[in-house]
Length: 239
Figure 1 (spheres, rainbow, N blue to C red):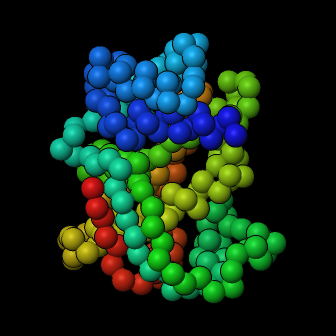
Figure 2: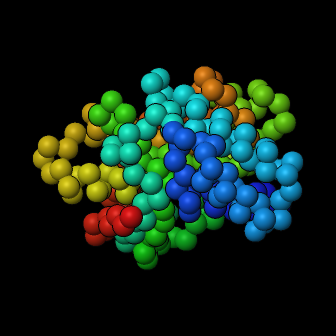
């Protein structure tokens, strides 16, 4: 699948190589991109497109005053591995998601899930940026919501996120982060003040002003809490 290969090539640069956002496209970043393109057999034309995508991403306004290029490395983390145990059911998940209409699933969608959800949940959070005292979970995609710029506007991206279940993905990330912050900070942790929300970057259509290509969501803390109740044992982060 060509789309998966595109994602794999971009992952080589953004995730595995941990490029310096502030210096892109420096010599090290270009070398990483050249290597990824050779590995996945992309030519010069595609390489230029990928370089442009990454350039747009690192300089785009994810939030007012927040860009990848301007991140303080000491106040953010990249490629964090997490795992925790599930201890719930599809019915409890349905009830939890119903707290927020934009995340709710209809019975037919829930019916595709196993009735009992048990086992170890394992994943990676691409980026945890901190901004104005809040921690966010951030991820990116190379999928193509559409061929027009309007397809990357906020309302269209919200629909694409819902259709692709990306919101469920970042809800899992927020559950992991919420559990970890509660464990580390104890009674001083205030999720309303310190848990920022989710940022999902659509690399193909980002604009420097952040008006296109960035999906922003801050699910209610009550929704995150209800999903925390579907897990057991503490989250473990590994860098």
